[in-house]
Length: 105
Image (cartoon, rainbow, N blue to C red; front, side, top):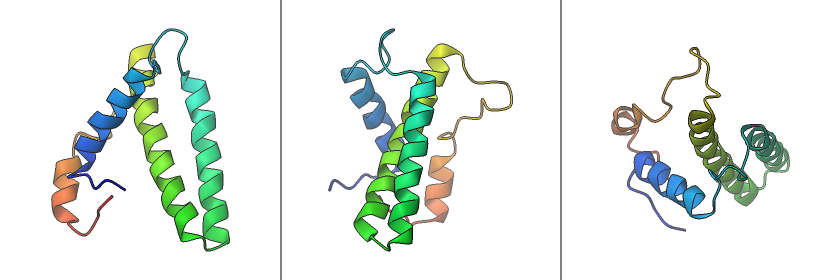
């Protein structure tokens, strides 16, 4: 498993991964479809927690983070964000990361 310097680097790499796989093309992933995928990943996370399966928990958290990044990009491109939810989830990552040096991906 690759270690990332910070979540900003991960965000950039995931966005490029999505672009390379045509997630953002007109016939690519949809905003609604990514929400369904997020709920699927959160269900897997709940199952992993319930059964105390550390690998499932780690995998589900990583997958959910990827889906959240994709959701942000798709929402931006499709103008799906409302005024209330336009907050850039990754704007202050460096600030949080500096306060939580023990957090590593």
